[in-house]
Image (cartoon, rainbow, N blue to C red):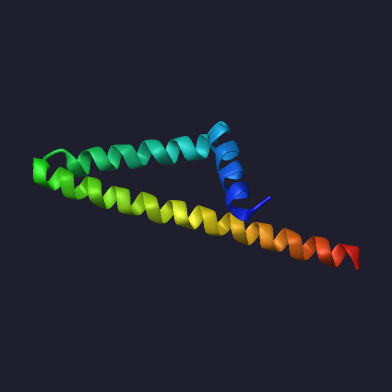
Length: 84
């Protein structure tokens, strides 16, 4: 299985999981802070904020892929050590 396929498989399975209470609380906190921060935004500021949010989301996606690749690499190294 290629790393890209494995990454997509893991991401899919992860997003199917139920969020932890800790995650849900943090998400709620972020949404409340975001709503307070953006309540007086003009249409132009909303567009700028939306573009910033997309860029941050893309960075987060890259980070997740790198974490998965790193984890796969570590598992391969560990499994080769176990065989020897």
